[in-house]
Image 1 (spheres, rainbow, N blue to C red):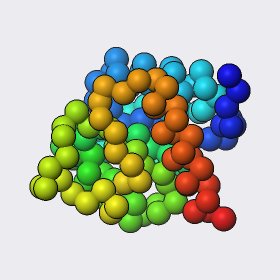
Image 2 (tube, one colour):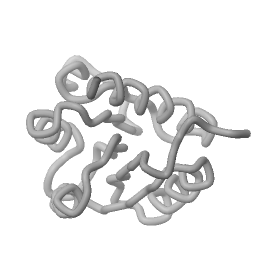
Image 3 (spheres, rainbow, N blue to C red):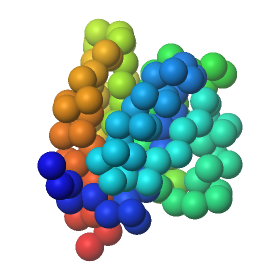
Image 4 (cartoon, rainbow, N blue to C red):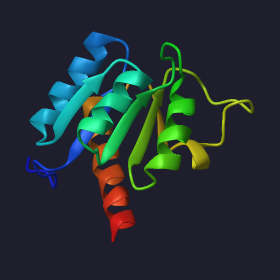
Amino acid sequence: MPTSSTPSTQIIIVEDNEAVREAMAEHLMDQGYAVRGVADGAALDLALHDAMADALILDINLPLEDGYAISRRIRASFPDIGILILSARVQTRDTPSLGQAADMQLAKPITPQALSAAIRQLCQLAASRRL
């Protein structure tokens, strides 16, 4: 099935579980996206220094800096990037406000179809911010 992505649509997956990161990356690359995967916030910073991204997929439970902290930091520096948070945690009253942290949050595990749909929506949102 053709997608609306182009080779210039850049996605970075921040996930410390290598098998999960590689499975998501492979699926998204099959959909036509250019995907890079990193294991933590420091590696994300280096990846963004090398080349900007259109969208980020962030795990919450990461070493040293959690996904919410990373998303707030990235949003402050790069407001046009679409941010999707993936979490096995159920949102509670103590969970940071999604509006300030990310554009959307989905539960793990996520199906490949749901991931593709979320990324399409996220990339459209990010593109509209750049207009």
